[in-house]
Image (tube, rainbow, N blue to C red; front, side):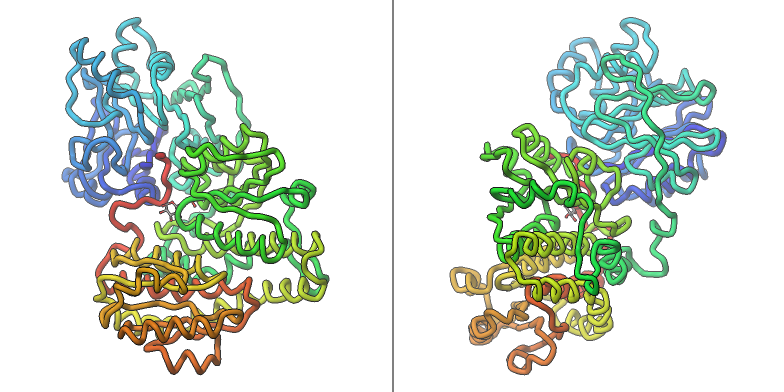
Length: 612
Ligand code: G6P
């Protein structure tokens, strides 16, 4: 993972890099560092967040117009000052920042040690900069040529940027598997893991491709070559990202802002894609390939984390509404278990970031077997979006809180719409039901607002259970994946151990854990299994568990049984996950805040997982 940012221009590099790093902290935040060329090469780094780095640079900001910065999510070597990036070459002339993993670092390190290189850190990155130094010195090469040749010896993933004290106007960057965006400003240039550090200064970017190396010289401009030394002239793109989208906008946390944005973001995911009055729903990327979908022998959805939970709900949706056999796979399992994939399969890859390494690898594997790959991605222009055959952006806007909220409901919105369209086009749902579902989809943003208005009541419940050590989440049918998502939200930001289970499975194990200290969150909105879920609640109550029930408005029966209940508006069952998840997001948020947890940057996690 890690976030990297580099600046070359006329301005002071330090504030631009520090601000850029803060925007990239979602990618990792266990240590941070910066190098700026100011006659010499000034490098500062430390364990902790970017704000800790600022505190380390006691003598005020560094001066200089060329610099690189890094925020780390540790892979090789514990998070400490020494392992923090940048790393320097043996002679101290070169400084590197790196996002990725050099898989063959051990033999490279051994060979370099045999040549007399001495390493200070445990990182693979330090090996890489010593390798570049060695190649450079051996044949007296330019930095870019030495980098190109050194990278030919490297196995693994990298987005790197290197400074050279002896060439103070130049930086060299390269990428493979990890993202690197090049920004072209007015007499200034940027390199970063995503476009957020540069949007304040430019909207012109180039997304570098794998095995491309960029040399940026303040006086001579930029040049992009492949690792095979072929010159490339990629198109400069214009990005549409506004600085306000990257700010908290008055909310205490990004997660809270993103929870509250959902009425808008869900509507954005449907914009131009649905018109209930006229009776149509359409997704451009799907329409172009409708035959692939209609003739698909099966759909396989692949994803990680919260996106995987959205994929699970899609399995229920596609099978229930469109009667297409559907499977869901963790991307990390799919890619390594030799799956059977045929050209008749439609593979749907879900990813908020569009950069998750396992999901990307799963996409590449399925592509190599001839399957049709559809991406449902938030981050426009991201690697997964560019690798799939077609797709639909979810248009949720930048999601910065590490715990995914608005991206999840936008993914669900698109998936639900896909299932409704396919169900109708395949003749599996009636015209009336089709129109009803479209109309109810259009009402979702308003219904979500109604749930958000109950936040104080949910906050009260959070206060009652904030000291729990464990929690159980139960759901049936469409809301079983919501139980999984509710449990994930709680554990990732509040560090309370939580498990999601199909409600009926509780009696096969988790029931043994229930006592008077155990909150049991039950999503009890199902119409089809209402009696069954009532029995499950009775079973929890009989063991003195604390029942928090998410119920349909007016469900007096469950309301009277539960210790706490949260009412959500009535909606067709296939659409109910879109509403049921909202109170669970709010509940987790408040519990985490009450426990003093760092909601937007939970320990050990990162938003974009670009390591496998
Ligand atoms: C990380 C994030 C999760 C996210 C998962 C998949 O674990 O912390 O919030 O759901 O990656 O990310 P993606 O960007 O592929 O949806």
